[in-house]
Length: 191
Image: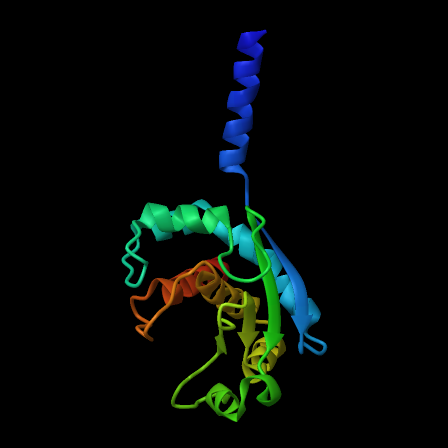
């Protein structure tokens, strides 16, 4: 009897440790006709994050601004999917709440920064620790018109890293937050 309990316990621990993460978009605000595009982008995100290639890219990558964590700790944090900010916090589930940026909520300055080709080059923002992923409506429209699910999924991954507690100083070439978004986008494009 004790042997059976040990075997079952071992199997449960192994299954929990290897459980795949999922992605759930709980809310979409301002997506006006692009909800299906958001769903398709979110649907491919766990396929990438659960892949061996993503794991290898994180474990072997060179990153800055990773909160003094090792690459293994960063990977484990991503795979735990336990949000620090916002109302999520169901482990193994990337809980997303998404909205488009607006002048009323975010201010005219952010809308100027959202313009394609602006000097700032803003694509979105992390929502100020609210757990809400904000996307510039201009970029969302461009990606939706091109059916560029890789770009939106990469953006979601970038902003999700903020929800996990990482930040950046606009060092796009080495920052963990930027590189995770780029890894996701590249893996989708190469599939």
